[in-house]
Length: 232
Image (cartoon, rainbow, N blue to C red; front, side, top):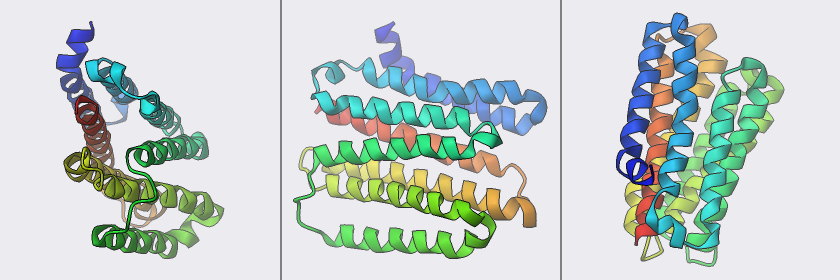
């Protein structure tokens, strides 16, 4: 079983994602297919990273990754139900908190600032300001927990940039972790704009495909990055 997950884990993940996206295209009659395939995504990634031989030999803080992925799993399930939107967002907040701690373990806060980090800080700060001014009236009181969420995910992205200062992780951070977090941010931004703006003013057909595809790519890039990091 372990060897099977090692070899075919990512393939199973892509198949489950494909099933979910196809279910979205088919519509609400296939809501069960959508739910099951979405709920399977994160458990597949968790099994995949745990099955890696290098994972067993890695430091104890490796379990921060599992906690982050489990938070995303809870978020995926909870956000299926509109009444649990806040709880789902809190679950994803825990994902970003654990990711921040993990990336800090890889490269601590004592590292000097770089131009790349300064540029990313400016861009992500501008992004949070944009979310606030564009959606504050539509979100009402939800704007504040959502801003906290955006600050957390932006901080997680900045820590991936800082992780690139680690000689062991620089290529991995540049090719997997930072792009992964940018896909994550893109997914959440599309979700927020659609939920609080587009869906009421000018609905976009199948926008959920964009949200889910970018989110799934984000999680896969992050996990592949951790797989390579542990192997090194």
